[in-house]
Length: 183
Image (spheres, rainbow, N blue to C red):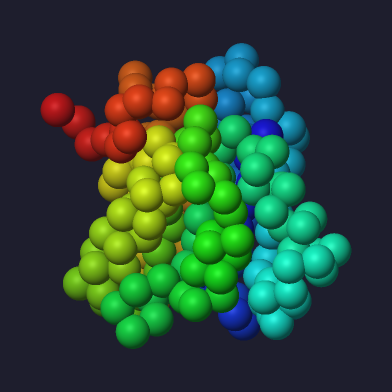
């Protein structure tokens, strides 16, 4: 199962649109490659959850955590906020147990105003996802504002590159980082 986490605190964001398009493109590529995957990824949009992510017994928080816990692939999307990922994304990821992404492939997706901001935030997100035990795809998908109007093309190109890479495997917990660049 693929789960997309949209860590943008604003509803109907371009980051969310790119994340959802990437989840769909990846699900389609995996289906074409004969890998079992749902036809559509599960979407965890953090914007409407707001303060409820801080309430341990809240049903929507438990459902969000369950969606992440049940995934094989987690696409973790965030806009760049002050050189890093968003606070609302950190709140959700902090709610996961130690090694809460162990056995999962995590795909970092960062949007930013410029390439330098995107790279900095992506590095921080990769470190966080690795700390949670994920096998992290590096580089992830980064997009600057001028690219965000073409989210479908960006998502499809990234999914093609990702699924064509020999190291992309859902069953391998190691190495902790999967490189999608050519050697």
